[in-house]
Image (cartoon, rainbow, N blue to C red):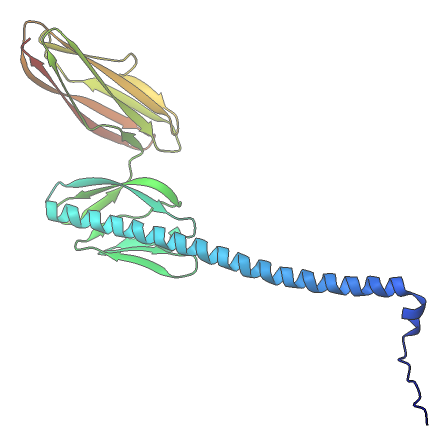
Amino acid sequence: MKAKKVLEAKPAFAKEHPRAQATIELLMILAVSVVALGIIYLLYMDQVTSGALLRDASSARNTVQEIANSANSLYFSGVGSQAKILVDVPGRVSVMDSNISGKAILLKMNNGSDIVALTDVNVVGKWKPDSGRYYMYLYFDGNVVRISYLAFELSKESIAVSGTQGSIKSDYFTIRNNSDSNIEFWITNNFSHAPAVSLNLSAGYNHFILTSKEIKRIDMNFVLDASYSGNYPGTLGLVAFDGDTNVSKTIVVSAESLAG
């Protein structure tokens, strides 16, 4: 007895429309591929976000530790000690939830985690309202370390030159307006040792206005008379007015005239 051949039944649609069936199968493959690529992309973005958060957390940790180390150093150095440090507050820090209180320097990340460094001395101050890199000034008054920010910055706090009799020695310093508004400046030359040594400053030094982030260079020429020798000290008095407060600074200057 011969075995009957069993034929596999095929859908009538596939028989009559083979191209349509192939298109449907291709669309299904594409749909699966898109879903797979979407999952891979989400996993990749999650890794990128996690990596960026770790980098910002590391930067925040370095910042709070730098402040703590500087505060401790001033505390052990004694009354009147001061320091200027560059801090970096990352963008993934919630500055409004961060604080400086007592002996704790704290930055709170956007994911809720705390980055903290502890000091050996009480610290008084606060973070700037925006993230980014900026200079922070620390000063130990004998009881606490105080944190402040200057609306302007001097490139030098003191200047000293040395030259032979009859020569001219030059130096300079710059003033930078760190604020978001104009600042008005006055400089007074309190160096009075003529004719032994004369101090001439660049034109327009005595009164000027700097716009936001503008930098001005003040050139200084010490003219050493040929008949005198010795060390001649003095100061430059600087007053800055930012519309709300006056800030005064003193720049110590000295010139040494050596016998030729």
